[in-house]
Length: 530
Image 1 (cartoon, rainbow, N blue to C red):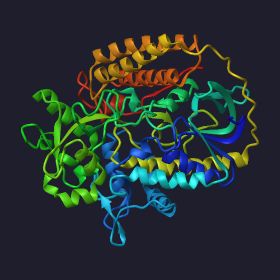
Image 2: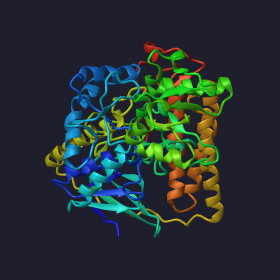
Image 3: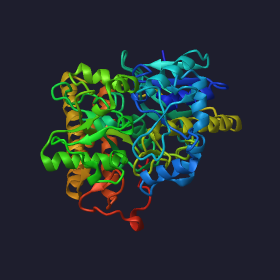
Image 4: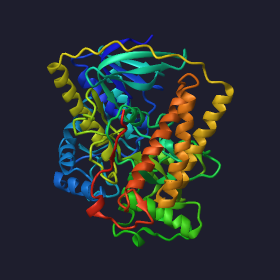
């Protein structure tokens, strides 16, 4: 049975939620809500690593410069400086908690990835996220002040109108159909990304943009949702992966170790698009691969690592090597077929570097938040870095806030119960789920136009109307609420994209191919009036 109240509620159990919880739990009771098992999130699938200045020849200034360059003029320089400079301490903290990073002798092994001028990617072979999630979960489960509520779906945040604060959430237990209003003095959104808004994505099933949708409905500021990052190299094996499946990622680190992108004619093509060739940032490489596929009529391009040798590939990329081998691809002798797929949301709930949203009592950290670190395009492996630093800082901010204010949230009134969805309703949910994701992939992908965005906006508005009508008709099931959330987030991506009449970073509109710093050198910020 779910509790009626808690000190601090954390929605999500990836690196941001767990780092935050472990620090806050030193003084307060923390309730972690996760809609599947705690490890089933994007952190667990992160391959590459964490970007941080640890090499003797590297400097904070170089990392800051690389980040600002990749972000195409929209990064917040102060936020970038703070996060970059606090990265080494955060990595040391992870190592203390048991994360086993790869080493070269007595030193940490450092990889290189696209957009980085130095080798600075701390990693655990090619399963960095798994190693981090495993270590953090062990620590959190052993902490008596942290309780996990698994398989629980957060429907909506609760707003205390008397104080103007977020004061908890409505939580659904799908097994019983019961909805509980649980009050909290502070709520942290750590719900991760929204890749499931698109048909083809590297994200797990849980990445349906729940945190962004809940914050939007609460009237929080949302920023830069037009900047959806498509990873340029995900595994393409016809017949092995069905539409809607999570696409297996071929890590950025593979290019960092010398992988070369080639087309089906065997031509290395990245020099045509950028002087950094295969180590260009992801926005450049994704557009290049998309252009090669469209102009040549090919279904994929290839990532050639055959020159690296079998021993090196097995040692550095055992997960990738074995997964490809399972699908009949020996990457030591055959190039890897790859295509772009939706990967990471650079926008989200607008926060400062301490995780404060625009709504009192509501914090956000990790991919769900938008601090200004990533600007218009995330630099590879800066995501786990940001999640660590912002969650640590958010924990400090929450501890200070709870020590200073004497706020006790009110009991949350029970939500009105409705009839459960019928088989016909479930068929409708399944149909619209597929239709929305296909709409986003076809009309709001790597390359955009004004006319496609207009059509997408008109169509998604109909989906939004229909899902709201359905919510008036039957119980708020997890399936229906996830559909609502991907529709809301899809509409936010479209609305932000329609406002930006230029091309910058991850947003490329062929009707406005030039970058316009005079009119659009700023964040796209929107909110819902409640």
